[in-house]
Amino acid sequence: MSFTLIQQATPRLHRSELAVPGSNPSLFEKGAKGQADIIFLDLEDAVAPDDKEQARKNIIQGLNEIDWGTKTMMIRINGLDTHYAYRDVVDVVENCPRLDMILIPKTGVPQDVYAIDMLVTQIEQYKKREKKIGFEVLIETALGMANVEAIAQSSKRLEAMSFGVADYAASTRARTVGIGGPHPDYGVLTDKDAEGKRAYYWGDPWHFAKRAAVLGFEGKWAIHPSQVALANQVFTPSDAEVKKAQRIVEAMERAAKEGKGAVSLDGRLIDLASIRQAEALLNKAKQIKAA
Image (cartoon, rainbow, N blue to C red; front, side, top):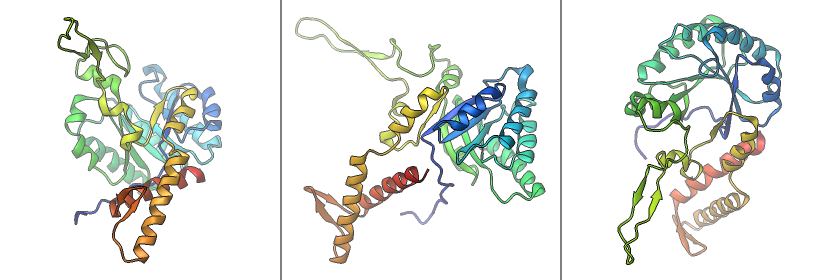
């Protein structure tokens, strides 16, 4: 363990984040009654320029009048290169105690996060808010990807980072007009076999970002309520995984009582690293059960 210790972010569930356009308040109640862990009321891409101001008013009213239960409530503000962004922050944060997080789109440099952090901090001080607003950043440009490590260290408010493939593809001028998914031109042609034939295998242009759950990613966005249940299922540890983790913890507890630093379970060595993995999974399972 490094001597440099990282303060953990607020422990929230991020299995599913449902996008709800701020310009369509008729969808607010449906989102509130759904099963998404997080709802972000959108002021950016889902809202036409002429509707931005009304969408902001809709969101303020919705956050204050609708019962959102225990859901994490977030807004996606407009880009920092627009004149909408500061008013999104000021109006909503000043008037909505129910707000939990802000999603910063097209984050390119750590200073983008710093700017919103400064503004939110001043509002919280002015309004004497005890609950601190958390941040999620959206990495969806080549600039953001180039600075992703610095962005990850940009603010103590930062709780989550999401990868947006559509705008990222546009930023890198990728030859696709789809949002995510494979592409027939992204593949590999094998050498000739004994009969002189060559096979072609599609590749995955987004690689690890699509292999999300097994690599430790927390969840997925949903643009329709029908996608929420699948996201929750994929990012919820299975009963078998939970039972195995419990067995690891129990085995290590027995080993500790016997003065052992490692023990064999099902023919495999487990040690302190194993128990850290198991405890992380069990903590996630407990959090889901309590939701």
